Length: 254
Length: 258
Image 1 (tube, rainbow over the protein chains, first blue to last red):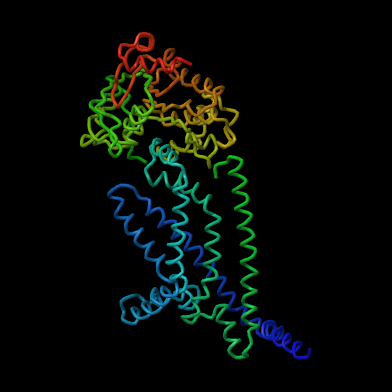
Image 2 (spheres, chains in turn orange, yellow):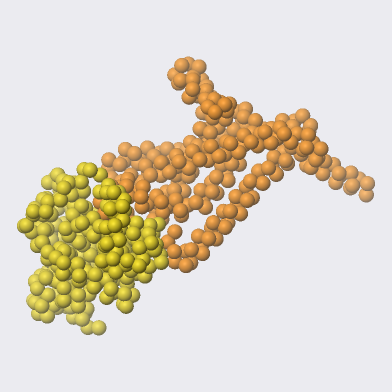
């Protein structure tokens, strides 16, 4: 009986040592702050980059191939490579090229806004990768807009780009807000990968505590911090999807 | 866009001249050397079985589906092939189109649907566009619904907004592609009435339709198409009451039976 009790206590202490959590709270929160900044900056840039890629991908005609084909190649390449690898490539190549003088220092070793260079390497790598993911989401939205919309816009004299800007994209974006939000949640979790190049975001901060204390409680704290953000986002996502389904069943074109 | 050419108000020759127009989709020859001439102010109703190329004819005229062979002259200017120096803008500036499925922009109100063309394409002043938009919506009997979004409008109301949207670009020719086919029967009349009025004001109109009654009452000329060519054309009284071609007789027999 005593042995069982000891086991339970040991398990509780391993995962939920509240004193350890409390003592290292500031360090883990500081890491989480980086995680949030990374998510928001890279998330916003991915949304923009993804939309640019998606629009380039839809350029019509033979001449449009000059934009369309590179866009398709880029999207397929970045979707097919692990984000971890992209992070490593950006990190190693930009630093090296800067030291060789091939790239100006403010790009090669960016410290914009007082953030460390590894933060920006992370932003660049995540944006490059998630831009490709999100481009595919936008594409689904653009292709879901009925063809008659483009015809109507063109018949009014709009150019392809005007039709995209004023007619197609506004409708497409509305349709794909839920899957974009889904990608954002995935992006936020993937920011942990930036720890491999030395950014002390929340996972690395918790890992440092764990290494020293040989106790997993700080890692659990990091998990809880993630859940505090991702669960409300997932609930919001559910509500958005339910609302869209209700609109569709009412016959509203979204 | 300032590149849109100025409209030539002085043109008095035929509005449209089509010669030997061919258009295929893959292996399917939809227009097979079609000839047609349309005068200014003329209302032409195009009849024919489905798949005869009626809608493709309209899409060729406004270059949504440019023909592969043959020539189209719009107000005397060649708009097809190598001779198309003026570009698509020249055509779209002069040719308005109304679609079977309305194709209103669902994220825009009725008024915004009507003003988006002048605003974005002609780069006109917003207040002037709104004023003209309200005027056009009043003309099609939609003055009460200016701020409504398309999903709050009936099919007939949407189609009337779509007509106002096309008119907002001050077209010289209006193309109507089976504009009442997607409507409930009781909503057909309100749309045809708007078109009737437009015809009486002297608008040049090409109307692809299955409404034989409308063709009889409003058309100056009826064109019967089959297999991508004009089979028979003439005043409605002749073509509808006394068709000469076997295919026309057959088609009208089927349409008028019920």
